[in-house]
Length: 256
Figure (cartoon, helix red, strand yellow):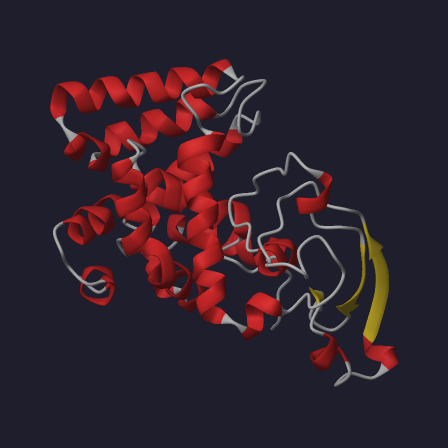
């Protein structure tokens, strides 16, 4: 049976409530593939900038559907960061949905493999999300499958997106008070306890709650921080980032 991205995300998030196996999200290949490409370097970037890495990885997983959504796949923007300039955001797109699988297609080569009766074309509104494709493709309708066909460049884009999040978006001089307060709290904890406090579960959960669940925050919905914290637990991201920080390879840490 085929699932839409929204149903797949729901199943992935809450399957662990039925399955008592520890770290139940690790059974999904798309979750593993997503974290394998970024987890180790993301952990290093986060610790350097006083952001809990488990929180960041969980947010990226939730916001991008573990890079299963078409906007993230095209733009490389796995954290849903808005662009401040028109010439950096993803424009409106006219794309088909594969009817049988309810899947948005954007690779022109792959689209040609389907019959017109298998596709439902629809205009997609412009996205305010920052487009990380290189020039001359950035913020255009050309070469939408650039990252799909250039996996090493996709990883670079994801890591740049993460760097933007920890240095600029959740910035110490952000115009949003919740972000400034979150950074102040994290900096204070590091000054008192050292960087390793950022690897603890309480710190990760506190950071998520500080930046969300209220007006003028990363996501105002009360359920959003609960979903992120659930991912931290179900994917074993506290243990994963601790092991990665201790020098373990991703595969060794993931399979423990």
